[in-house]
Length: 419
Ligand SMILES: [Zn+2]
Ligand SMILES: [Zn+2]
Image (cartoon, rainbow, N blue to C red; front, side, top):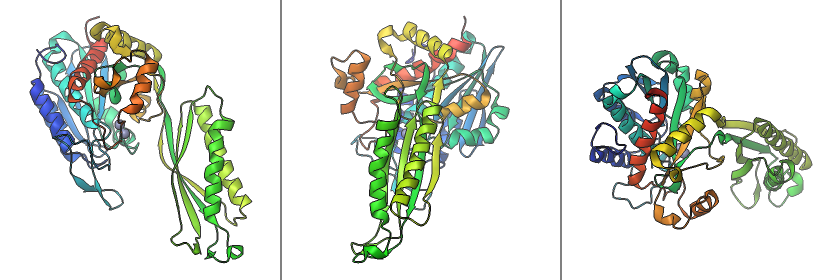
């Protein structure tokens, strides 16, 4: 008997070993060679037709099993430049060279190792249980989710022509909710994300002669403060928007007024109209603050990364939510509301013209959530738990892994199983 109760795939212990191995050997975005090889090897052994090097290191496995719909299930593979501090026996101590040539620590701080392991487990279980379903299963192991480029790269490299056009796109992301809990949000589920670089141009001078220069440090400081008004003063209270200035860089020495300053912004929105309003307001404020400082050159606003919102198909999400409730019990399934995190999985669904359902898989130690049962209580308790991208973040191995495998197989069989 395996974790999900279907026919035997790899033993639970073997799957746990795959997870520990991946966790200890994380790979940065677009460098997921070892992870991709592991996924490809597992798929081949489970009887899938395997395609590799799609859009970089992407892997697809196809299991054609008679008439019926095509279901695409996606797991992302990449890790982050974070120094792991979990203290786990299988923690990563690896370092790697990033795209800019810097040596950085590498950690699976977003749980993509769990996504890969769950999909390997589900692939084995569904292959072994192929008498119980009919249709085509496409498993996709995607690179570079953290850059927001991996899904598009796989589409551009012909994923849908090579692996088939799905009728639905499914996937899951671990989150700091109690392990085993499943969060399904119909409609807008993950925010759109825009990362901007703003360069403010001043005029350098001696620090003793501010009258001879145009100070980009003051310009940057005023801009940062003024940007705080975008969400609080221009966006309705029931709309979702976040504007964070995550970096402010200028100058080298106390007595030199520098030539320019740089701001890095992260913008999160759910509604495309709100996104447009926020981006317009940022541009307006940045230009106006430069003008107010007497800048002789307009600031440069560049988009350095962008993710569209993930919008779960309402009917498909309700179908999965009902299937999860039947399988795991209604108390294990909840609606987490829209989250301000971002994901590029929606690009696969949009390109295929197929509905998307992307849910959250709880991965936190349930002891942190004693007494919390309502959505509000659970969400409040997550504030005390390390979140994705933290050096302390790691899902508890079980029951997260078992629940993740079972959720994937249950969701796939909602489309391919006997009706
Ligand atoms: Zn992430
Ligand atoms: Zn992630």
